[in-house]
Each structure stands twice: as structure tokens, then as C-alpha cells.
Length: 399
Ligand SMILES: Cc1ncc(COP(=O)(O)O)c(C=O)c1O
Image 1: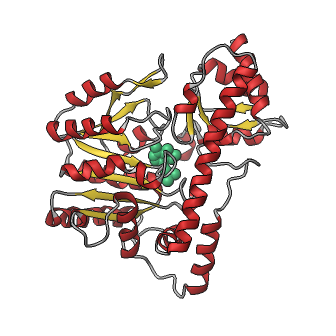
Image 2: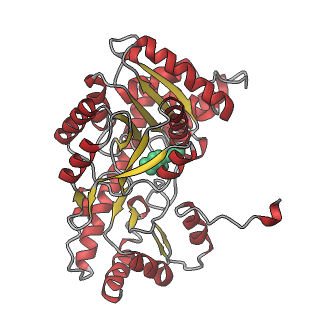
């Protein structure tokens, strides 16, 4: 059987890391895969995470399985962080959260659920969107369509096209929305635009499927959940796939959550029981370590304060690199106005560089970014920004 199989193409984003590692250029810069990097190009373990791990190691006395949905405390902490709700408070009875292996795992479990209970529904993703959305949704058997989102000529949200597209999506279909720090564009709707989007969802009857992978990187943890709170208040049903890979730096611990919001407690419990059935036949129960860390940090006031401080430092560094990049490009003689990069939110910048320019930078300068010109701004540092700006200036002249 195996001899008849041709190799699959490498993953467009993770494959870049392999190419970067193999590049002998001493000045190479990795702006590809979306992980936070510090000034020395390290992806550090947060101090709050190290402290939580120490406490976990000291107190842990079993490696018994977790419940299928993860520990109940984890669900409560997710309720507080993602929805701003205290367990037992009004509204919380509509929400159930499940500890999943990363945001990807959460998205897939939710997609399986939607395929089972809304088999004829189509799932809609933004143009462009995270490179893995389509694959995850279609692997669960959902048909995937695309809605308008970004205007490459203004480097901004195409709000009127977006609104028109959302108003035409049929009742019962599924609409994947990035809650903040849209990947890959870094362009988010304003709070007033979110209010209208929630109104369209309520009126048209499609099901919002919120992807919340960067909570805390847009502004802060509370401000970034604005759309989630508005959807909650609207009373409609929706799902949220959260990732704690970026905001806790728990990339390889595979830590995330799927939350469902139903019309009432009965419906939430019924749907939750089916989510557990789905998990049971895929991975049975979640990996514990990352979940324990999140639970420990969010459940302890001092550790939580430390973590929030570290999270805001990561966001500040990225914002500073955006400014340095824009300044550096102007200093390198680039005439095109790149100031839009400072307005984008989160880790990524949709730089406006063409695929040919992206390839040129990789082949000539060892600068790696994703096709379409997505740059991980966290890969920029004070040490490499001048090299990067000179190289981009050169590529813009040549290609
Ligand atoms: C928009 C978006 N959703 C989901 C994910 C998946 O997150 P995780 O790494 O936790 O699976 C990512 C990761 O890059 C992402 O950018």
C-alpha cells in the first residue's frame, strides 16, 4: 500500500520553518510561523508559566485521566477569561466549555459537532483567512465558502463588502469570525462594526463560530473579548474556539478550549453531552499539563497579575517593532506609505508585498515570510530591523 503513495506537499506555514532552519545565511530572519519571539529571537517560557509549573510539579500526585471535557475548574476559568462571566452568574448557564488540544483541536471538535447537527450547512471563512481554517472545516465534512473581508488596495477592512456578504449568508449556515488580531491581515472590525455584525447574525440566523486565538494581543484580555460579550448579550447561539498557545506561550502543550453558547441551560447541557461523545472517539480526553498551567495562573491573583504583565509586554514589543519597521522602511528610501502596518493588530502584518517579492527576499536575503506577504512582526528585532528594511527596499525596486 505505502509504495503507491506520493508524498504530500509540505504545510505552507510549518514547512517554512524547515526551510529557514536549513538556510546557512547568518543574517536570516524568520517572519513565517506565528509564534512570539523576544529581542533575541527566542520564544520564551513566561515566568508566570514557570512558576505555575513548579507548583504543579510539587502538588501533583496522580496522572489519572482527566474527564473528557477537562477539569471543571478549567471550564470555570475559561468562562471568566473568554466571556467575562463568573461561574453561577446569570448567563453562565448558557455556556459550556471543553478543554481541547489547542485552538486547532477546538476548531475541529466544533466542526465535527456542526457537521453532525447541521449537516447541510456551509461554513464561511473570510478572504483571506488563517491557512488552516479550510482544511480543518472540510476535514470534518463541511463545505467551505468565502466571504469578503479585506481590501488590499486600501490595506483595510472592506466593511461594506463584508456587511453585504454577511447579510446574504443563509439561515443556519456557519460563519467563522476572528474575534481579534485577524490572521493574516491584522485588520479587525471596530466595536461599532461588531455591534452591526452581531445584529446581522441575529437577524439572518446564521451561526457565528468565533475563533479567538489572540486574546490579549489586540489591546488587553477584557477589551479583546468585546465581540464575544456582544454575541452573548444578543441571546443567539454560537461557538468559540479559544487558543492559549500565544497568550500563555503554551504552543507545544496544545492548550485551548471549545465553548458553546446555547439559548438556555437545557440546550447547553444537551449539546455539551454530544461534544463529549465527539471527543471520546477522537482523542478521548485532553492533555493535562497546559490546562493545569492555565488553571493555576487564572486561579491565583498574584500569578494572574504576573501573567497579564508579561502578556502586555509581548504586545508592547510587537507594537514597537511595527513602529520601527515603518520608520526603517522610510529611512531606507521606500516611497510607498507603509504606515498601515502600525494600525494592524496582533502578531501579523499583511505587508502588501507580492509573492514574487516574498520569494525574492527568501532567495536573496534569507528573509522568510508566508506567501501573500504575511509577516510575523514578532520576528523583527532591533538587531535585524535595519537589514530587513534595506532588503525590502531593494526587493521593491527589483521585483
Ligand atoms: C486564527 C488562528 N486560529 C487558530 C489557531 C490555532 O491555534 P493552536 O496553535 O492553539 O492550535 C491559530 C494559530 O496560529 C490561528 O492563527
